[in-house]
Image 1 (cartoon, rainbow, N blue to C red):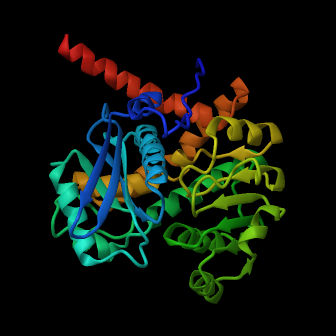
Image 2: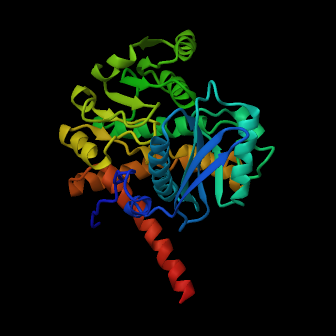
Image 3: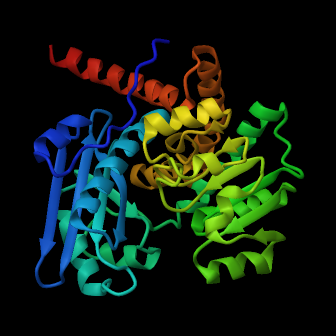
Length: 363
């Protein structure tokens, strides 16, 4: 396999916006605004070669520039996530600008539904960070293109991460037995909380953290875990560090602190600079499970709803994750390049093949 570098290139948003879209081959950047409700939303559509664009809609209290950066990067990751798990959809992401605890209300959510509906199916979405399943029901009053009626995809995401961690453990230790393996879980939301349950059942020794005291208390009441302050979590000596909260937490500052053998978690965009930090982990001897591979279970869940499939199909597809990781790790070892770069190559080959098929049908 001829390895090329398709990792995300961080564009300078202050420059010409069309040059920014060109940098990573994004197709569209769409802005939505509703004066009455105060809705401000940024939607990035990266690539629709495989099919209609899909991706979560999140609400975060960030600047307009940061919202654009986040939408562009997450949309890019969604394209490759769909490709790697063989879902016939493209990548997109919507970011609503605002504080979900202060600014979110029914009027704004209905306006968001109107925005999504106005795209006439070009963007298929589900709720993400800052938006709940109850919010999805309100949004769905105004659009047919939001899909969260059959529960939280975070459970399926967590299951895929769990299966991926077992594959990583097998790669490093020769067996996927998790008993007494020391695993750090950062973030205890839908994904992290479910992951703790699965890991606990397998006999792992768990160290956890979250900025939300309620989430911590809930986990402590159910499972035998050690709680660590969020600032100290990177310093823990462990077998697996599992980031399941915000992105860009694997960076120049945190990598030197890591005392783990494996980084494998449910968070999106774990590496702040994908190329540089993938190489830093690789040279340090830390096995990294590419995030858009190991957390692809959520996509399988959401796309089952879009396609009208039974959710058992999502579980079957999620069970493919260990095999995909095994292939990635084998190529990584042979080619002496980080798993992240290998994963992008495998996904891109699927996109390029589909693109050639479309061109052939036209000619």
